[in-house]
Length: 375
Image (tube, helix red, strand yellow):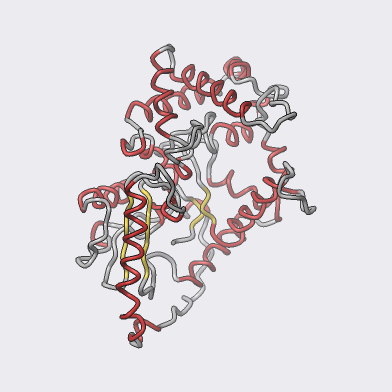
């Protein structure tokens, strides 16, 4: 994986996942979702529009959308209604973790409303009802939706130890991951204007995303970019430098596949691309109702490793045992130039002729590589 500050590819895959028929998505689902967030952006241009949105979505506080930090956090980071392809699961009974349920319901809602944002409002209310049914006994559902970015950040400033059942535990988990992004990897999932991001564009920018490192850990954007550069020097950056006997398994709707290796390059590096799969879904134990592709992926990984074990035991070549040397330190990149360079077609990995375990067709793999090249 290549550490980078501006991980635009993450939300590119979110958009494509909303169209993926393998998980119940469709072009219409993406169109309604994206258009609703675009309509919201237009309403952000006037005080009257902001008040209307605050009322429509029952936001807490006094004029919260006058603060662009709140717009970026509420509408530009994960969208005003939840759809999480990374954690999609066909047996989940909630629309935020089952894209078939999400897109199916959104399709019905869009047919009964005049505008896309009205369809998102219906989904917003529906998901609030789903959340209320899942509330612990005796704990009332929230009376309004908190869009306060300041409260979100303050929650992560708490460092006292709490139990796993404490509501503050989630804040601490987010703090740990946020520290890793600031100290090592970046990977800020931005929603820049003109991108393929399906959320409200233009507020969750790379400059906004980097600011949380300063708020929580007193790290400047320059510090973060320096840390990212050091990470790539240490690990060698993209394209699995020096890796042998490695299987790269990727899910079609997992946004992290944008960062991964989709086609193996030699007999000791293989890649498996699982249609309809989300993040690490093939690592779960086999359960009733598990899609066949996930079971096949588990078998493919086991078979490949089993075929390598005798080879690896005898392989003492320098290529199999070599260590990656850190690259010479370079100047810190500037935030404006930090976006990942898209590889050319000539730079794309060649197909591995020995890979007989691919669960997507060669044309489907080529299609994904082509999208990564052109976006």
